[in-house]
Length: 438
Image (cartoon, rainbow, N blue to C red; front, side):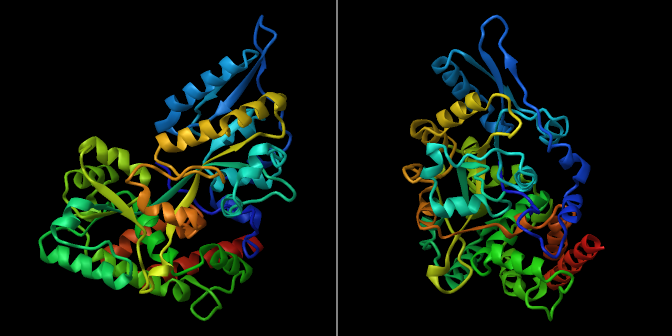
């Protein structure tokens, strides 16, 4: 499962200093400074005259998949041995000046720390870089960009929306909603019929901000622009400033509050695992989750007929968008002593048959111009949004981990007071800005 992560610093956080926001994310400046003088890792394979390189990838559900790909690469290039490093925490590798030669990591706050320090190599001259569409390229740079470099190559895109039970919709003769009014009408009809409209899992906070918060905001607010403008305001953040959570997110949170009225009654105590189980058993019509939940649902009931659609939050059907994140991206540290071999591995992984196979087999969307559309019918509902770049990065991914968004959402859902949550977010952001400018 990957949902994207909290906001990195390198895009500017002009109102909040780089050091301040990195500290808010739980990373000391010294740890990053230690990454500047990178040295290579790996060495000659004993007795073979070959080279050993390390490949870093820690996404649990695809470890075995990448193991197979690495063995394929070794057969093609007998002189190179690849060690699969699945260390959960990446920071110590850079602090100890021993990062892997090739990384395959979520494009998120943590990766942005290394992009902004300039310790990832420029990959712009690789053939695969020319196959990345501009819209996907911009997504990969939304958190961090080092001047004059293509520091990462997108590998996999996750698009999230509403997962719905087609059998329940057909039984009650309900259309897939394309406007906010239609969505609420569907929820009302389901509730009247004794069916839980939306299954929610408030015990796991990431599921709230990834689903309710991000989906409600996405089609109403240009999230990258909002956070850029918020940064530029510095400490001037409040209900009367040009942009603020209280002002800009007021309408989205009205939508969020309305959606919570159609939750399962025990939502506050239900976990992500509970949600997958319940939805797999047909106990709700809709589920605000991403493609990572589909395999879990299928494990409960492989015959369950489900589809996906983008949550509409306005009464213009054309406003609908999907929440996306670069699920995996490839990179090579500047300090690798085996850059040629590392680049060979990256080129191999970016070959159409390899990258397209990975995305097909792991319920993801392609990130290259020649990528085929997703064939899995469960993904088909969001493919048009990927094709037309009608997508947005989740608002929750732009908020530092030092601001407990998920906990705030738990309280807001419980009390119905989303206004207090937005006021607190403004206060927290202002506090970070003041601390950083001191």
